[in-house]
Length: 232
Image 1: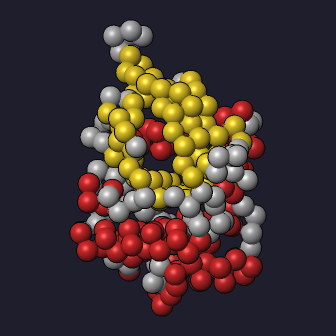
Image 2 (image 1 turned 90 degrees about the horizontal axis):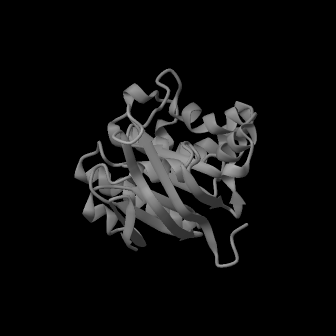
C-alpha cells in the first residue's frame, strides 16, 4: 500500500530536540520541521555536513527513535500511533536496515546472518535458507554462504548486510553511511548492487551519505543543513 500520490514514505513537520543539563541552555534542535516524500522504487540520498541531522532523520523514519513532534507515515501507516509491540513487528516486517558498521553476528555463517530477520519473525532456518541463499547470490556472494563474517572482507561483510536487509522483503531499506568504511572500489560496487536491486525489485532505498559522488548516483538528493531540507 502506498499513499494516493505514490509515496511510500511521508514525513510532516518532523522535529527532534535533545536536552543536555539545563533545559534551555542545553537545548539542541537537531531537526526543525522536516517534510518529505519518497516514492516507491526510488533511491534517495540524504546528504549534509556532519551533525546536520541526517542519521537522526533516518532513525526516525526507521522507527528506531521517536520525533519530538511531527508525523511519519510508512506504507500509509502513521507509525508512531502504533503501540510499541505492534511497532516492533511493523519494523521487522516492513523496514530493512544497513549501517556503516555491518553488525553481523560473528559466530553465525553469512547465510545464517542473512536469514536472521526471518528467524526473529518466527521463521525456521530450513524454511528460509533458500531465500537467504538466493539473496547472497544476488549480491555476488553465493559461494561464500557458509563463511563466517571474520573470514569475509569488509566489502563482502557489507554486501551480506544488504542481503540481510532484504530478507523479509521490506517495503523500504534504510542505509546509514553503508559505504563509509569501504575503499572507493568497494563503495562503488556496493552502490551499484543497491541500484541494481532497486531496479530489479522496485525496492525503495534511502541512503545517508557524506560522499558527494556516491550521493549523485541516487535518483534524488535531499540536503539537510541546520535541521531543515535545503533542496530536493
